Length: 217
Length: 130
Image 1: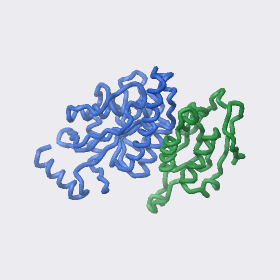
Image 2 (image 1 turned 90 degrees about the horizontal axis):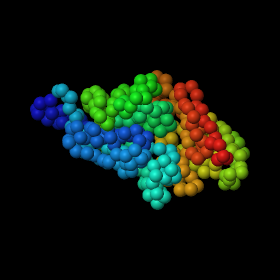
Image 3 (image 1 turned 180 degrees about the horizontal axis):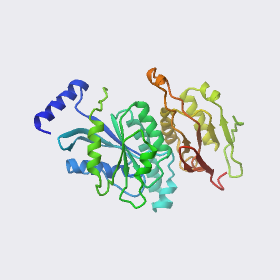
Image 4 (image 1 turned 30 degrees about the horizontal axis):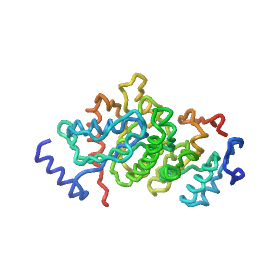
């Protein structure tokens, strides 16, 4: 997109919505690759890294925000703020960090406490985002209550949702299962880890979020 | 609805499953409904709600659950249900509230989901927890 077109689009958005760009939240249960995806997007378009990743659940325990990320695809572009949110769960047991991930008791209790606060923060952010990239693990059963609850909430708010079927680099990945489970939403298979199919994700993000209206606050 | 207990669950008690009627739920405000659910689940009871929670109530329940988690006594909830029914065209036009469906809620250290698809939710009570 040329400089003149970009200025014109930006000016149109400001005129219509009073704001420059939409805030897109990256949501999902713990350990589905939300921060890996946030890092992939931010690194591809700004060269920076958003946050640390780990195989231990609830690595991201406070929301991280990267402003003014411009995604481009051919002649189209999209300028957004990205909010990487902590994983949403219905249960958090500090003993899981000890038994499954070898953390000591105090560290586990602290992580569990921060994780509960992270879930609350993620839910609060739902009030403030204009669109959502819902990340799901394509190697796992998609019909989890967390997925269903988040989707139901976003549908009730009338927010645009793009489902990222992550981890397609894994052997047992089945993005088709996710597509069949949530036919009402666009589903993009992706590997946030190695970037496979990232171009398709960016193209879909531009199509899907371009008309997203920034909330007036 | 099953008989309520005010006793805290201990390892020798059997598991109480309460079927909560649509009428009972409709009498409660969202806030009272969530308080009722959390209180029951903290007592160790499993609830089957005839009329499920709306998407906003479900999210609020998760939030409230996180606020209530206590290290060794309450680790959260297991909740399974189906999405709200698809609205009809008339409901869409008049912005009528969609009806949520049946929902199962219980303590996370007790109730475990085995599988779930469009037609069936299978759960089990974790052995030795009751």
